[in-house]
Image 1 (spheres, rainbow, N blue to C red):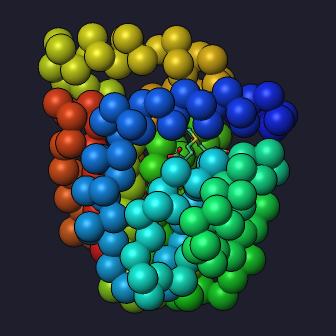
Image 2 (cartoon, rainbow, N blue to C red):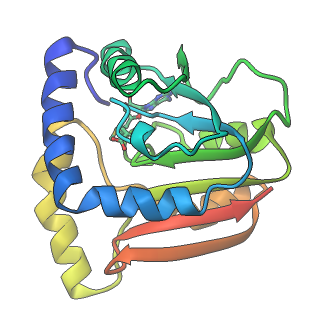
Length: 197
Ligand SMILES: C[S@@+](CC[C@H](N)C(=O)[O-])C[C@H]1O[C@@H](n2cnc3c(N)ncnc32)[C@H](O)[C@@H]1O
C-alpha cells in the first residue's frame, strides 16, 4: 500500500516523472490512443502524469484515494489549464450511477490495489454498455528476460509498497468484461489491456 504523505507523493512524482521522460510517456501515449468516448474515468490517477494525454473533448473524473498524490495532480492540471473533476476516494466504491462512463482508464493502478477483482467489478458497473476498460500495467512475464526485468523493478515496487499486478486478463473476464485484448508495449511485462463491457 502506498503511504499517504507529502514526502512519498513528492518522491513518487520525481521518480515517475524521470521514468516518464525515458520511456513511460510513450506507453501512456499508446494507451490514450485506445481510449474511446468522451466521458472518462481515470482510476488511481496518482500524481496526474496522464493529464497531459487527455484529448480535447474528454470530460475526465480523476479518482485517487491518496490526498497528497491528488494535490500534485490538481496542481499539474491547473498548470496545464486542463479542467478535471478530482475526487479523493476508493475506486472500489465510485459515487456515480451505473453506466455513466464511456471508458475507464488506469495506469499502474493494480500493482497497489488490495482486491483487484472488486475494483474491476466496480469499473464494470460504472461503464456504459459497450464502454471500454483500458489499462496499462506491468505484469508477470513468461520469458526469462521479461522475468529479469520484473526482478529489476522490485526495489521500486518495494519502495512504494506495491507488487506486480496479478492475472488481470482472467480477472477482467471474471468481472464480466469481454473481447479482452492484451497489447504488449515492452517485452511481455508491460502491456495495455483493453476490454469491452
Ligand atoms: C503506482 S500508482 C500509479 C499512479 C498513476 N496512475 C501513474 O501512472 O503514475 C497507483 C495509484 O493508485 C492509487 N490507488 C491504489 N488503490 C486505490 C484505490 N482502492 N482507490 C483509489 N486509488 C487507489 C494509489 O493511491 C496510487 O496513486
